[in-house]
Every structure is written in C-alpha cells, then in structure tokens.
Length: 422
Image 1 (tube, rainbow, N blue to C red):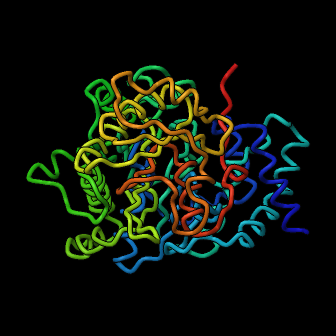
Image 2: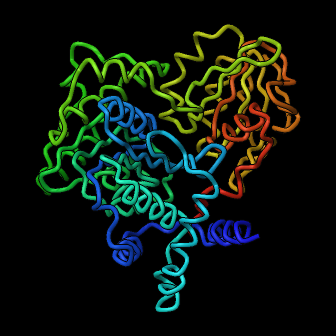
Image 3: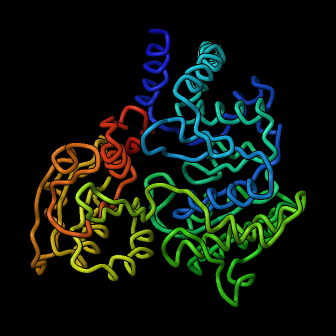
C-alpha cells in the first residue's frame, strides 16, 4: 500500500503538466546538495537522435570499463528505464524509494511558494541525479527532456555537450521556426565546454554558431570529423551512423578519460536502444518492426528504410495534427495497407483524425483498429501482412512493446504531460 500511495502521488503530479524553467530545479538541487556535481557528464539535446546518441555514448564509456549512469525520457514500458546504471534500469521499488526521499523536499518547497514546487519531470531528474551520485558512477549521460535552455537537466556542468539535430517539433513551447528552436537547444552551451554538432539546417546552425561564439563554447562538427565516412553501428539506418559519429566525437573530446578507437568501434556494434527500427519476430514467424519516429524530421530519416520494404502493413498512431500529417503521408507512400490506431495518451489523434489525413490517391486498405485488437497477446498480431511496421509516437511504441512481451500494461499513467499553452 505504501508503494502504491507513493506512485499515485508521483504520477498525480502529471496533472500539473510540464513547466519549462530552470529555477525550480536549481532550488531542488540546492536542497539535495547539488548531486549533479558528483560526477562528470555528457549533456545531449536535439529534436531527434538524442536518445540513440546518449545510448551510444553510454555504450562507449561502459566498454572502456567505466561505471555509467544513463538518464533518458520518455520510457517505453517501465519508469525505471529512464534511470539506468550500467544499462540496468531501476526497479519500481527503487523509484518509489527515491520518490519518498524527494517528497519532503517537494512539500517544503510547495509550502514556501507553490509556484516553485517541482514538476513530475523535475522530480524524476532529481531522482536520477541522486541515484548516480550515491552509486558513484564514473560518468553520467543526460538527455534533455524538452528544448535545453529551460530543461531540468540544464543544471549540470558537462564535460561535453551534443546537439544532434534541429527540426520542427513542440513548436508551442520552443518556437515556430528552426531558428527559435535552435536557440532553445543552444541554451545547453557552456563557456569553454566543447559542443558536438550534428547535421543541422543552415538556419539552425547559424543560430548555434552565434550562441557558441557569445558564450565561448568551441564547436566541433561531425561532418568535419567524419568527412571520409561515418562510423558503423548495429542500429539501423544512415541517420544512426550520423548519431554514432556524434557519440564517437563526444567521447574523443572528453579528454578527462582515455579513448580507444578499437573499444569504441566494438561498442557501437553492441548498442541496445528499444523502439528505434527494432526488428522483432512474431509467433507465426512474421517480422514486426517498431519505430518511434514521430515528427517531420524523424520521418524523413526512416523513409529510406520504409522504401526498402516490400508491401508492408504500417500501423500508424500520432500525437497532434502537425506530427500526424507528415507521418500518415509518408506511410501511405510505402504501405500496402494502413492500420490507424489511437495511442493511449490524451494528446493522441483519433482514428478519424488520422483517416482524414490519408492522401486521396492511396490505393491500399485503410483499417481502424485499437492497439488491444492488434496485439491481443504476447508475440501475436492480428493485422495481415509481412512485414508489419508500427510507426509514430513513442507512447504507441511503448504500448506495442509491452503487449509483444505479454505485459499488457498501460504506459499512460507514467508519462510526462505537455498541455497546450493557453
């Protein structure tokens, strides 16, 4: 009962939404003794690729024999996926224990000024920083949640920063142009701290370059380091090779630690990162691919992978009309049939909204379904076709991944909320 009560309290904070701003996190961190200063870290931002790049940096560092902390979001199935030491996720019991330690700080801050009360995401970030400090990791890898400048993770003092990509996403929070979004991501830059820059549109690169010059942060471009060709990785797609280049260069620039190219090469062939063009096998032998590419830039990166498939059935679910439009149109270019579903999230598009976005010239089948109907039990899928591709929101990918494993759990109660701005 105590654990259940704690989880209800923690997840209930989602109802307040996610609020950008760093002052609340600084206040909470000060009360905790600034755990973010307990170990050196990498700090990764970007519209797409930041999770994969974080996983690659972690893999390289761990392969060098260092104890690692990895903090990412959102999770797919269990909240402990967000906080990992040596790639072992925290158990629910460990998350509960950390939440109970943080609750008195939350209550004290709220009593002084309710506006300063930490959000759900800020408490989870603080839990990760505490865990990494107390387990004495050698290096932490911190992925931003939203943006960068005002993200809770930006209390850190990194060895190296990484900006993987810039595209249009979360415009209601980060701005409606590539330049505005780039300015928010560039907020992670620190004086004297090297920053690795991935493949960016010229408009975004100009903003980041100007910010770097203003704060005195040296920039290192992946395209320059790997002009002769990207590193190889077991993660599928040319975009993942670009992410591998960013991870490699970040580890090279972290001069605090020795870097061995052979170790890095082997590590990049053994990266685990669920939900990114992840190939699974159903009980009947058919191939199921799940991928969380959910915005315009992300869809562009995986279109070559879709084009290489022969008459796939594509299951589509999205959060928000802007994301859904490019997703549905791209899927229709390659699918023999489209299966439209509504992910378990309050911001998810309905099946009717998705159907309205299907191009008029699409000649395949368009089928409405629920996730439960499609994946009724472990390793099964009722949709016709081979291969089957689940594409879109990470919340949808999390639902499918859970059902594929026979867990049948809803991830919605654990996820961050971003209610529309008034």
